[in-house]
Image (cartoon, rainbow, N blue to C red; front, side):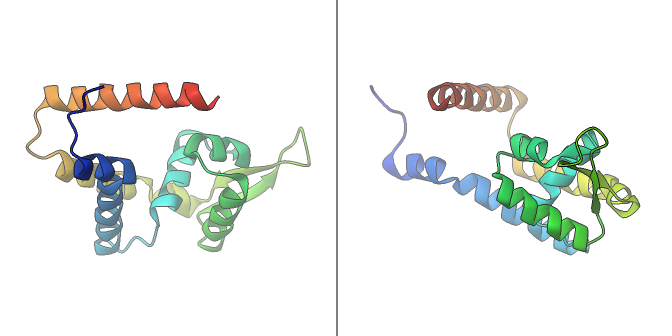
Length: 149
């Protein structure tokens, strides 16, 4: 198969270089705005902002993390008073994760910073090219997801 990638840019894509620089920019923007969240923490909050009161397994599935990693993230978010664990009324063995008032209040500001970072990242790229990139990465994801199932 002929490739359009050089070794250098293929390795950059495979190593997640763009993903890494985006995360550094996002963290930098959080710090500039006095938000003490990591990228991993905000992804957990992002799931909860859409589906408050979900299980740790749901958080793991939606963020592609393992359960021990989710446990550590939730522990740290609890220490920051952003989330709380509550026993599931139907199954006492399960804890559901809920946003605290503080966790709810920061949503708007955090989302604004994430959106601004994204706008900075795609500056100067025309909409048609962005759609091609989106569709291409969705296809790559689907191709690989099928292989690992």
